[in-house]
Image (tube, rainbow, N blue to C red; front, side, top):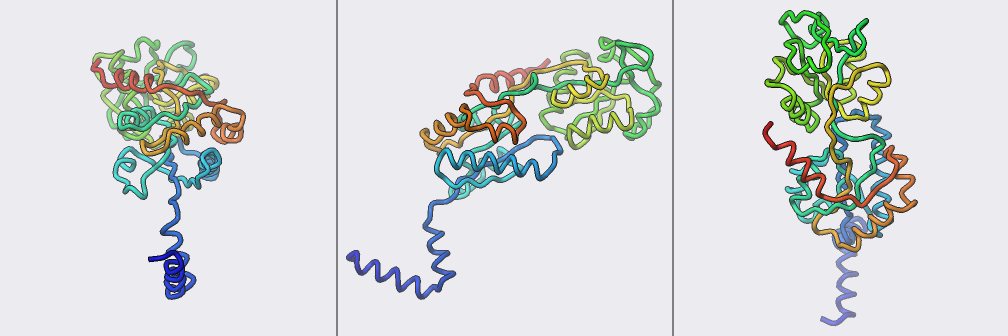
Length: 302
């Protein structure tokens, strides 16, 4: 078939389809958009601010690579593995370190790691004991708001006594979340047994918000982004476990040149608007090793 006839055939086909059909046909043969998956973890934030930050990062990647990049929230390892070839994710911005580690083990590549404004990780926090500086308040009638039916007398103990106190109850975000898993790991490293009661709030800020509003005497599990505010307001931080910080990753199918372009842009002053949207001081090249080491610690039996 010569070129002139092929061109004529395309015109006839487009005419038969009509304007809408011709547009769909053109779209079907156009390069597909790249997709950025977003996983913000267990923080309930202003939806507009989250959307703006996600769009800012998508636009930034698009400008660095020359591709149109769209973003999708609630990204998971399962979604990354089950997406069809034409609908697969190309990049992912991930806050939970275990998800980053899982993606790296599946061949995803680390583009860059965000610089943390604090020593990142998981902290266990507690209420200070009124009138007894340096001690922690546990138990008492406030536990009823968590549905604890057992009468647990209110007591004040030094931080070292929390791990063996029968009045200790952990309040963690979403059951099975990374913060929950790390909190349990921290506890097992300090105590012979887990607390007799365990409660959950959906988000990290719900943990601190609940403790502040009800003064319930529990052990909260949050990241330092929340625990530093808690400490500044007079609260007690019992323990800290460091974790690797947020990461931007690229899927195995993304060309190395595109990854290099995004990394170079992130490490330069070009990323200032994205940094501001994400509330971070900047980026670094990073390494997969801290994520692997963290998961080795998390899985090791205490």
